Length: 113
Length: 113
Image (cartoon, rainbow over all chains, first blue to last red; front, side, top):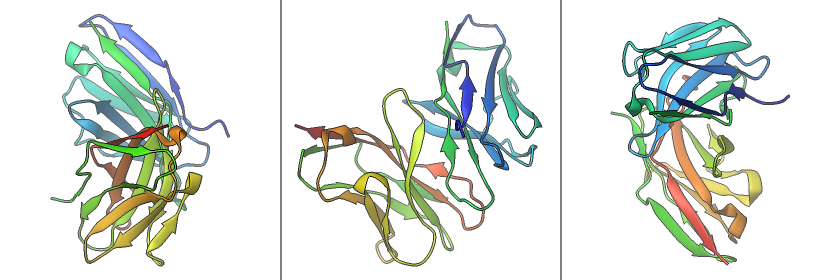
């Protein structure tokens, strides 16, 4: 298995633009997580899905953030409109029912200028 | 509120010496505890976990951790450090049954040649 795949690896965008981050979880995993990493706040859980259904989105910072999981092999995190304070590394992770550890993608480094 | 704490932002150790990265937890019930490592510009990689059973847990790359209920600690250890162990280490917990990892702030481990 190729592991959790995230795209793009790097994204530079202008303030006000829409940004879409993509994630392909490990096949067979039924949990998917989106985390954000910053120096100030560390690793924050934004939202997680179980069997493609959003379970807890209390970590999503604002209505500008939205996430979808249309099927078991794909998820998106969208920021619209983006702001400079959204600059961070965004990680997607997945885990399976029989395993308790999460497997992380390599992250998307987002810079909003 | 439930949490894990990593009291040291940075740990310095000489190559060949034993290393310890500290983690304490404040989690109700029977916590699941984890250690992850993050190398520069990479996602987090799972090292080891404590779910139940033997308090001494062995993981990847020669690391181990001891679950200590009386001291509410789960310190990461390695008998002999390598320069290649230099990375950011995260302690995490999941409340029993939830499988949703919540991470500490991380500790930067620097191993000097």
